[in-house]
Image (cartoon, one colour):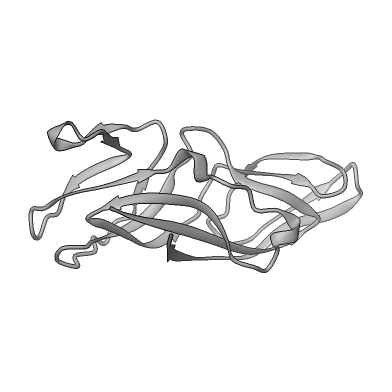
Length: 160
């Protein structure tokens, strides 16, 4: 079992507490089989709501799949307690947002999509529905009378 952290990096303008929202938040990943190196073309998602039993009664995981190339059973699980918001002071630095427990699968790419939320850094204005598919998001904070945004979203994976 290997623990892999997804590190998030962005430039934040007048917002803080950028985070995934809800148990149904979808982490879109490209996953590599650690046995044979196969990386399927399609994006796959995992979320906290999905729980699949592991063979042999060894608990459960967010996703269990058989590699199409080598037929090995692999799994990946979201470590619920590791989900952390990205705050204003983290701007322009990599910060681990979530960790995955990996057995035979290794995330190699991440695609942020819908389901993020943030708050105005000074005003506390809630921005509940942020989509980061374009790697940028902009809005206007009426309370603070200023533009807000999340720019240049990027990521990397690290072993924890």
